[in-house]
Length: 297
Image (tube, rainbow, N blue to C red; front, side, top):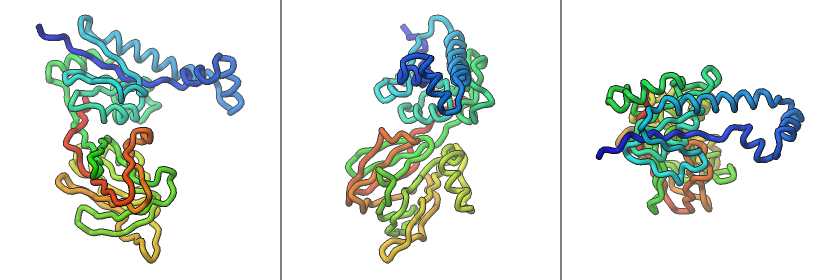
């Protein structure tokens, strides 16, 4: 007997949830917010918007289909099945947090607050979900296969990210390493770290670096099998240079970082808790990941 489809809903706790956990009562949470010039009503409204969206999502899942749910904090312990359809309800960043745990499953991003979020990755309203789910199961839904980035240490540790990976000192002090570009050029550097990311990431942290230095680099699109990279605040010295500070990495190319600090960290999409810790003498290789995120457009 064929199993019914399983829809896995991903969400994160709201600010109100966290305030009540921390302060115990609504009154104490309200006092805390008021002391910082904020209003509980605004926090409540955002909580209610997410609650309403989750209820709409639940109602849109056809009866008889299987259901699963997971909060952001538990993603690293949740087992996604290959046939799952994943529905992320929240901000764009929650899609990036989820992407690294998927292996080709279609993902639908639902925006609980249209107009407030950028809505690049959560581009659908809750009312659209039922039709989208049926289209996905019928193979008729338009899919955008977004490029991802992969970092691998020479001891086999690896991580995958949707937006970007950061390589740098764990306390954001100067990072020392030897960088070898995709073209084979090498340079010893001391910097605030290195960003390497995808076209999806080029709308966020990478774009900030690109704009700040008035770069002429052509940033890739979300589906291009190309990465862009930027060195943050490279420092010139008798031993370290500042010539290799940006570039591109093609599908069959890689960027290599030989660690020359006691240790560095490598994390993806801002999740510092999930990281690699290469030490002096280790090499980290960064390239386009084989897997992609299949976003329902």
